[in-house]
Length: 288
Image 1 (cartoon, rainbow, N blue to C red):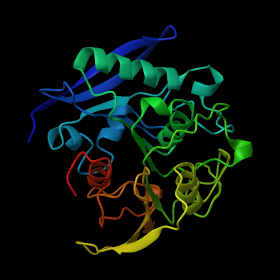
Image 2 (image 1 turned 60 degrees about the vertical axis):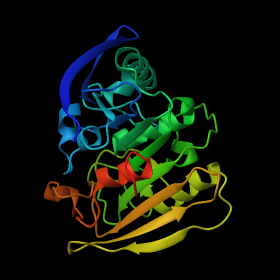
Image 3 (image 1 turned 120 degrees about the vertical axis):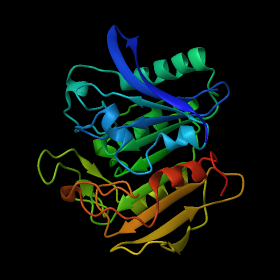
């Protein structure tokens, strides 16, 4: 296990102080960077322990540098045109924040800029979607949890650089905030945040962008520990093209699967897969 420490940091972006937590192995030079983007009404500290094992495992077991940026007033200026968070109203440029953060970690810790992964939950997943369209050259892949592609008329970015990227998705069929079948995202039926594609259509959207012509393969994931969910894995995989993988958690809520149950209002947490383990495997941080 790699020794690591977690420390708070701040940088200035467009005249504004932006903060982040950093978990880094003792030797970070040449390490991959995982950016963990929290959901709405969360914090950088809160997302660290949202699932178990936590994201720090990517540093302790896999040798990655893990950064937890903090959104302005607990939100991001994301990919949805309907978002009305203070980050949008007050003009916080979170794409610029991510760019500056990567630059800072390359300067201060020598991270491998060719292996930067954006991992986003809910509002943070929508920021990862924005990054993948506007600045894909900064990223080696994205992971989306409880986040679907906005429909075209509700899509905020005006720039789309069309660079293929590996994409990992996990979505529960009983997500109370971001409907698995598509439709209007909300906060438990209140504060609508724009319409999105279904989770399967989101996976197909990224597969088309990556050039996959053949249909996906679907397998049921065997569960080591029985619970009231089941999990299917859908893979869009063509030799030579960036893969797209989606885990459908039947009966799962607006949560990250793992050993730590989320609060009940968010829905059921599956223990049949572990979010952090799937991130590590999909992005090649850990051997299959």
